[in-house]
Length: 116
Length: 110
Image 1 (cartoon, rainbow over the protein chains, first blue to last red):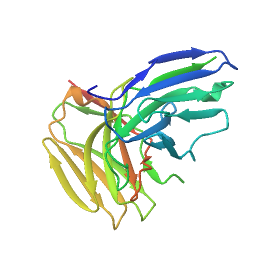
Image 2 (image 1 turned 90 degrees about the vertical axis):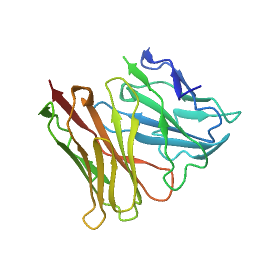
Image 3 (image 1 turned 90 degrees about the horizontal axis):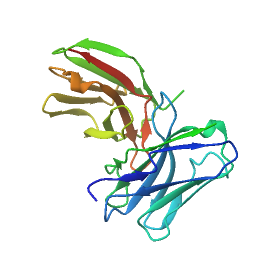
Image 4 (image 1 turned 180 degrees about the vertical axis):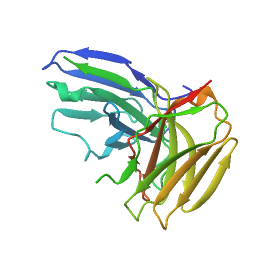
């Protein structure tokens, strides 16, 4: 595809439900990133994949958050037992190679999650 | 203290004005500096990318980095209503972990 796509665009969940957010990176991009953007804030790093390997998950807020990229392309961010504080926009980004040396990251439109 | 600080605004200017957007940062190891534009309910879109100190110009946009004062600027000349958006500065060391400011909301009035 031409850019990074994410689905669903909007998700409303009841507190305690599990949710799964999908990211389709730019075709052929090696690196994939997930960010969380709270209202009125900048994106904050959650996790980084190089191909199928999750090399950094230091930004995941709790063990309720889990991400995978099993075949090195599509990625899923899963949040178990959602809490109200999980309400945010979840952004996915991809870059062409390793992502290092400040390589440009291309962002998707985000999934807006609202936990009631 | 956040590693990248940015005034959240909002900033309102008349059409045609020169806009100055600024960030400060605290990490001396930052080497790469980016400006992203984010329209409401959209993802961030890369505007400018600068390595180390200096100026970079692209059309109506100029990015400036002063590493001695840890100051990042974006200038928009001849601002248009279509420039109304949130502008995010970001910095990174030699790795992949972008650190973003909070974003400045800009409104250009017709």
